[in-house]
Structure formats: C-alpha cells, structure tokens
Length: 159
Image (tube, rainbow, N blue to C red; front, side, top):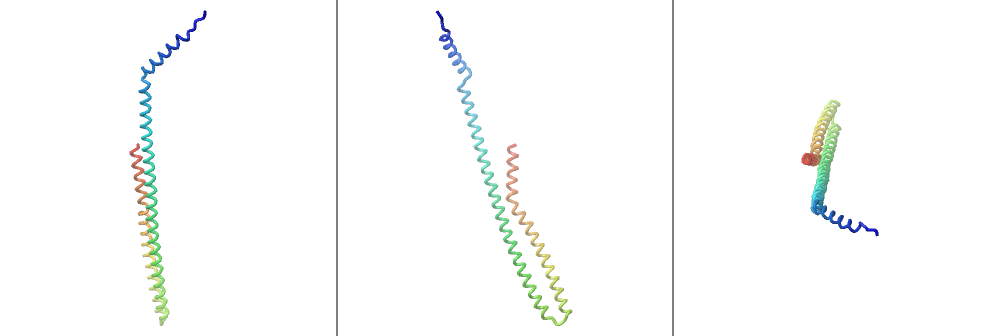
C-alpha cells in the first residue's frame, strides 16, 4: 500500500502560515502602509492646491501689470497729443507774427525766438516723457516683482 503524505503536510503548512501572519503582525503592517499612503496623498493634495494658488497669483499679477501699463501708455499718449496741439498752436501764432513783420531783422529775430522756444519745449517734453516712461516701467513691473519675491520665499521655505 502507498501512504500519501499530503494530508499530513497541508495542516502543518496552514498552521505555520497562520503563526507567521500573527507573529509579523500583518494587519498592523497594512495599517501602517495605509496611514503612510493617506499622509502622502494629503501632502500631495496640499502641494497641488498651493501650486494652483501660486499660479492664480501669478496670473493676477500679470493682469495688474498690464492694467498699469495700459493706463500709463494712455496717459503718455494724451500728453503727446497735448504737446503736439500746443506746438501746432505755438507755430501758428509764430507764423502769424512773422507774416506781419516789417523788416528782415525783425523776421529773423522772431524766427530765432520761435526756434529757441520750440527747442526748449521739445527738450522739456522729452525729459518729461522719459521720466514718465521710467516711472511707468517701474510701476508696471512692481506686481511681477512682488510675485517673484513670493516665489523666492516659497523656495526658501521648501529648502
């Protein structure tokens, strides 16, 4: 007769597996893994929310910068139009004065005064426009500069 050893081995192996599972605390190990996974998911969820908020702030800064630039350019355009109007009026008045002169000396004197005045006004307007452009550039860049400072701070905090 042949005796099979399989029935005797199977219950022993089953007991050993049950003993190992309780000794290594398998349920506790799964609980630890589950808790760690939950914590990592929570951290990643928080990081994604922070990135979204940071991106939103960047877009808002770009919009604000654009508004400042548009308003500044509008003001510069109005100033240029006003200067052109005043220059045209000044030139028209000077031409009327030159048309009513009685001598070449008086004509050249009026012409010299007009040219000198026009040059001084052009230099003054150029200086005014340059200063306004510098200020506008600074004002328009300020919201972006503030966002850059926030980004640097976030990098410092993360490191």
